[in-house]
Image 1 (cartoon, rainbow, N blue to C red):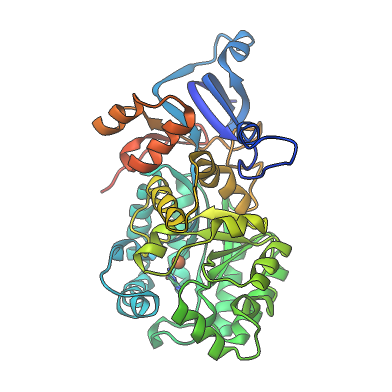
Image 2: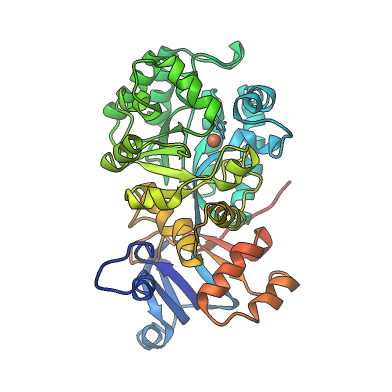
Length: 442
Ligand code: GUN
Ligand code: FE
């Protein structure tokens, strides 16, 4: 049995700071959403949290043989959770000039073709996972390419690194280059094989992954729904209502459907383990259906700005009580960093005349992401039994961060500074199940 402890400044969330009850003032509610210890201890047994709290009370009963690692000049928080990202798009990040549909044709599809080669897929998987870990992201919901091998390559590596990752093979049987499409039947069979091989192995989970409505026939979407029924517990990930031209195209392809989400709803693809990326231009009926089905939205502000897609209505999603997580959406997003993604999140809400406060931001990056992935109690905070994936944010990461943090009076101000100034340099260390992650680029 392995027991270890970390001592230092620690923060986690136990509730959504945006949920305001009528009795409590806004400030009370925000404060009861988190637990923060200036001098705290995180006690870990066999990779899981055993106890978490003030150092004074925990250290009294701590066995003297337990090694306590001190963390100075930093803040321990749960590992970040990225609810939407494409690993095969790593190398085409920041490709110039186009909006969604032309961008897919010019850059995305040609790049994804390379992932028919498993050795290549393994090489990029290694690069990708190192990027995630060096940016403090310990769990992600990941798109592969259309090739089953791309997912084998990814999961093999994620398993070796003991990571909690969710991924799936893209299903795409129309409106894409001929050498990048599957068929409804082959996508069903290959996804099924991948589920049987990988879902539940280590901390890996499978996501049925129809790319988006325009690239899947009705038959393919209906088989995606069948996979979900045949394998309870697997996820569903896709794109929804990202770009105005895309939405027009979906309407013209599906004249029988009321709205974009209906295309997915018709094939029973909504549910508590379904994650829809973007959802920028939704109508009321779509918000209601997402809420009623307990589906999640992935908010990808960096991507939304880069592709000129639009501004996500975070407050509207919250009013509808829809689960929301953050997504980098690499390679349409321009950073692997959840901190940089939060910077863009803040700016998108400013453009809408709304404020995204830093407690809400860190909630979205941790417990909010866990809830979006239906993994509360497993990851996202330090309640007993949760997997001990956590990071240390460095108060001395850069001269500017140090200078700015020295001026901060409150926890909220410090967190806000990290979201405005932070990137991978702010992540001093990443721990996977209590072990320091070994991060190296070859
Ligand atoms: N919609 C369909 N495919 C994609 C993709 O790869 N990236 C983004 N951002 N949107 C999509
Ligand atoms: Fe995407």
